[in-house]
Length: 210
Image (cartoon, rainbow, N blue to C red):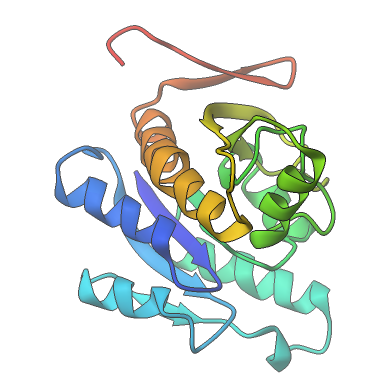
């Protein structure tokens, strides 16, 4: 299955996917494009090093969000993408992309949704919120993207303990290492092997032979 990855920054989750592919853990996934809204995103260098097409599609070149959304959809379709993975993509997807890829867009979020998610909850802010609230467990969630913010069907979650003395930075790193970098490749593998199904808006996994 052809997979496109959308990125805005360093691309550590992209690297987790590339490493999983190199290790033979994504047998049905073919990465056909890495697309960024920023030309200086280091994730683009990771894609090039792996021999994957790296594209820049900047919002600044479009008169409106609607035009950008249509251009992004057209680029994804031109690449033949069947699954879209958001790996730190800091652009809100519009109706053109959402309609073309309904239940085929995966996102990784650094908390256990529905905690610490929604508008404004991204990157280090999520871990700042968790520490400020004093929760003892956080984690990461892979979910499908819909019109809301972090409201789409949940596919996978993994909990990560919060330690005394944690800073937002130390917690962010541990959540990436213990949850994000494990969950995202697993989710892509399950989807590309046809193991993910939907019933009444709920995503579930066919555990047989998975």
